[in-house]
Image (cartoon, rainbow, N blue to C red; front, side, top):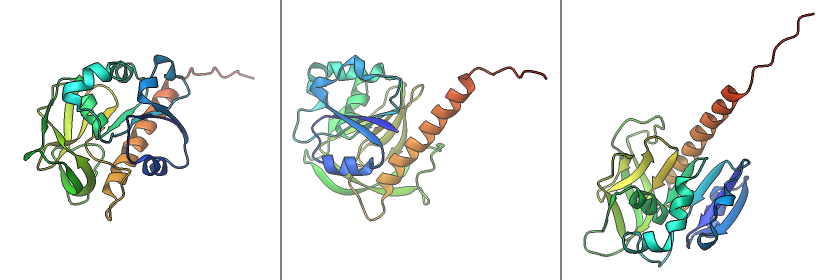
Length: 211
């Protein structure tokens, strides 16, 4: 599988590469994102988290306008992690706000399903994932559908008409339960299966020559 990683300044580069081990990975720094990176051989785009950078709410439209356009024009599944999930949410009109108390949360948090989805993430309807954030996502617009939440906001969402996902946590950061990794890999598994089925259906039917 060919994967493009857009590095938005993640502090977990090695962990993210480890999560995608075994695949053909190309990494591009976010200032270098251009439309020609969309090529027919690409299977997946992963937008990394960030570390010690500007907030999406106040600086995303100015600093990352080109990346927003890149996301909108993607022809393959897109998964935004943490900071990038906020970027996707913001570009569609979601509400972003600082966590209560204004302090960064860093550690394991519990998330849960808020609707039935084809992914069936958790056996007991809840999971534990690693998070490092100061901002949260709330009040999604109609284009985005919330799938999982925590006590502070939306944790997993998907665009209603396109395979674009936001994960408000770090699946590349392992926890004892490995729920983040399972979620990430389940999204890839189902989306690529769907892509393969679509490609198969679009192939022309060859006529059989009668002897």
